[in-house]
Length: 252
View 1 (tube, helix red, strand yellow):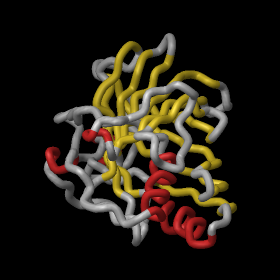
View 2 (cartoon, rainbow, N blue to C red):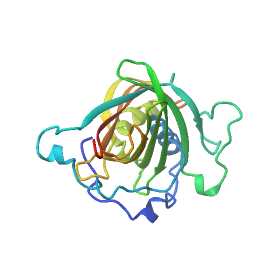
View 3 (cartoon, helix red, strand yellow):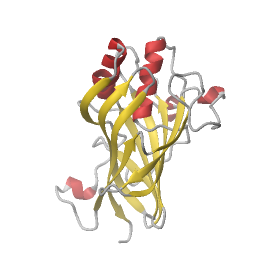
View 4 (cartoon, one colour):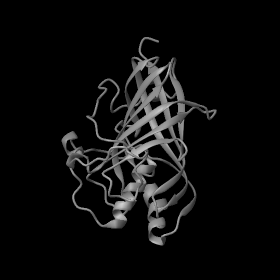
């Protein structure tokens, strides 16, 4: 992204309701951004005090360091989507049929999505969910899209990884979603954007936990959106989303 957050609201503020709604265009824009990010519902924020707010030691030294692993996972949209839900009165489809909708007042700003995930060879290796909440700083009319998200990745036979991050999807909103809504026509092209914007001091997300093979994990991650098409008529998106991790397992 062109810019990173330098500070964030208190955690109780992160869970606050967004003030006001600018109208149908704004509502549809945020749907697109949240769909692009593969969003899900709110959960408590977890912390990893030993790693938060600073770069990896090896990164600070300018080398990879012993024992550090770099690994990426991918989701192809729309073919890897498994479920998506929201409160039910928005243009973005709820699927599959029969899935529960978010009717509770505390979930009005929440969306949920689950997806298959692939390795670098395109093979399906697991399943991921992402939690996302639109932050109060978001301004739909100007295309400023700020969210708080938590990814949980499940790898049968390996374990799980949990990534906590803030996202700035403003570049996607202004270059893809806004032009599509303004013209009323699908946007097609190619936009590659890093949407992660913290909470670490280096602008990356923080890995806050893991199980199995990833027990004792610490490190960082970023989310990268590679968008090829967006249709404002139904909120459908086509592209590839990558989660790129750099991690170390304690004691290894």
